[in-house]
Length: 576
Image (tube, rainbow, N blue to C red; front, side, top):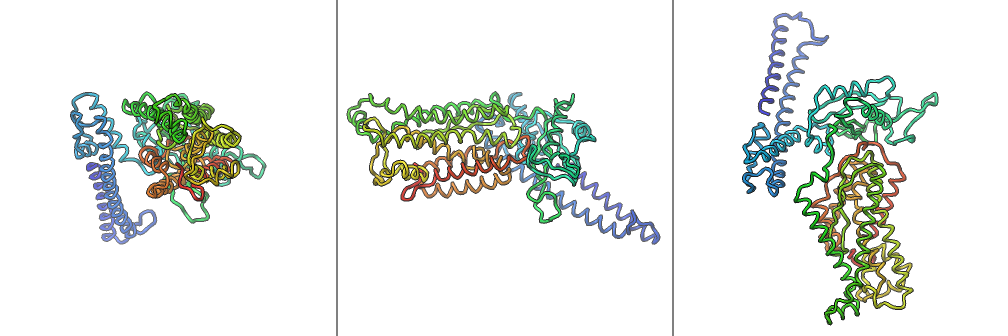
């Protein structure tokens, strides 16, 4: 960086020398001709001001990059210490100063093994790319560009423009472009007579004066992708993404074409860039996933046991007589909760198969209150569109929430119609008021239950206990946070900028709610989310095209139901 700074400074000095020469010539010859039709004195003053501005900007860029490097280096060293990837002798004593020096100057560290040396070299290259990330590269794509296994030649980036955009029958035009060794941006626009709608398919086509349909940006992008796939060479090297312009700033100029949001740009990456695959997971990650699965089985069984703790027959046999014969009574609840979690994951799998999107192995999350919080299901390939991402994300909580509501209503009806309660779970009446939605359903289906004192034990059918756990699990996963189902659905519905804002507000809400101590479910769930799921998810291939009002309203309705499920009924506390 120091060498680059010296080169830039030298160029600026050359400009100043040129200005000085112009001024000397002007003084020596008052009839000197103006440069490009302007006065040389004005040119000199403009150049001086420009040079001063460039110097300040250059110094600010270098300072910002160094500050960013220090922060990312600290995080990287902290994350990598446990895996011994970049530590010396495996004892976690890697120096941040050494890491910064190696990243800034490209020095090679002598590691004890070739494998560690390769990893360190790869990491230094990634750090260099992150530091030099251009402003036009979106945050969602920047990590994939930084970890690109290959570099693309400038000639290939240029061929993307010349071979894919240069055509008489293509309405889309590339107004400008820029590139690095791992990514490129192509700023695009339609002719002014065409609307730049975000709606996809036939809905965003318009008609001209002659009644002929005009293609949208989405149609034109699909055409460019089709050309890329049929290209004999570029199809093996390049992949394209349609995203919002990351350099766009809101404007109050009514003459702007895009008044409601940023215009689209096309980002190109190497074909080899993909999300993390199952085969790339570390032994530590696999071990944690296995441990979480075993722990989830344990907590789910504990939830089933706790639902029978107030049952007199169960309590007397197990606690007083040390007889475990009644324990199998808990198995319907145990398998029921696991079945709802499985239905949730099957919903994701069916939708992903429809759009040919790869999903990773789900990692169950344990919960001391409801048995399980569901599962973390990573995406292993880029969704083709926001619509695909929406359908994949919403399908899981949608089917599990519907199934849970059916089981809650069925459980209440079977409880009312039952004549024997000896084999039923027994819960305190306060559980009916732990959720506004559950309390409202109970007020309609079994109104007498809502009149019982909060501490009174109530025998209830196992279906209700299973449905309650499934409802809470589905509701918390619908919250618009990071990589949760709700976060993915929110991003697909209203765009990444709105999703980031809602995610931050929801996290703040969870934090304040956790401090109140009103709900242990929210407290533990908030901790899990903050630790592992708050980051934005991987990008879709087409993040510009909207999903339509029907899907947006569907998520708004489900989110409202989820909030009612998590809010307490008047006179009760939070869920569980």
